[in-house]
Length: 201
Image (cartoon, rainbow, N blue to C red; front, side, top):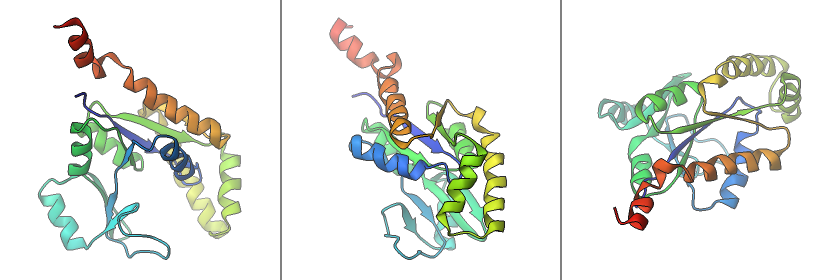
């Protein structure tokens, strides 16, 4: 059985990565999703185990001590992290798994999983990104400004990734992400066992 692959997805707030991933999972239901562990309080509408596992700072810090996380971050007093075991289990079972993290988390994962594939979701322009953030109508003008500043910092690190997908139109961006996953599955290094079986090596 061939091993699976870890796909890292990042992008600034407003880039549309959540919408893109939702459509990708609809079209590729065999994909696994890495559920993050976080210590902030659960927000209205969130469901335990859907996108996040909610825990305490003490438990999270014990996970850190035991080396059970691929990456982690401390933001406004709360921890965010990617548990190692579910990712390793998926890969060893031959399943492709997606983890959605920021640029710092992606850098940590790449150091530990050298054959991961990273994809950065890019807005077509800062003007479009500003428009998307403003249309949300959930942030103040100052908050939107800060999000844009953070977005620019993240975009400046897009060259750390293997692929860039420009989200101009959702369907096109979804197809681009799917194309990356499917083409990776055709790589020689993921099909050595099949080649050897057919050639009786």
